[in-house]
Length: 133
Image 1: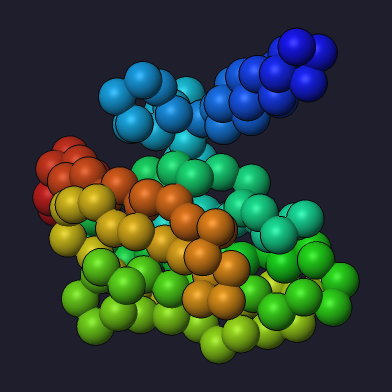
Image 2: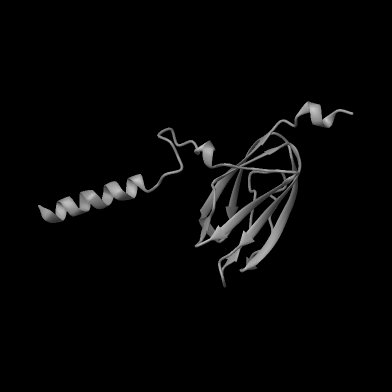
């Protein structure tokens, strides 16, 4: 009986620790990082991204990877974006940037050798007030 209770308690802890997504499976947008001035930084630490949600307006964007994992290789890859852009794997600590120009839509990002390091980049239409002359 005691063993069953421990197994049940462990399962409940594992389920509640998954966080960052609501019951529908959608990302918690309150934890999204917004691009500023055409740049957004994604931190890799302890074999995880610091967020699974990035947001940016359409157009040129630099996604900077701040790899804080000493001795670990990381990269950023947008497999669902046109051309499947990616940086090279680079051992940390290091910094690198992926320069893209994306249309509105949702794009997956992932570290190629750590498939648990995944998230969604949501690109919204550019603000017409800032793009017209």
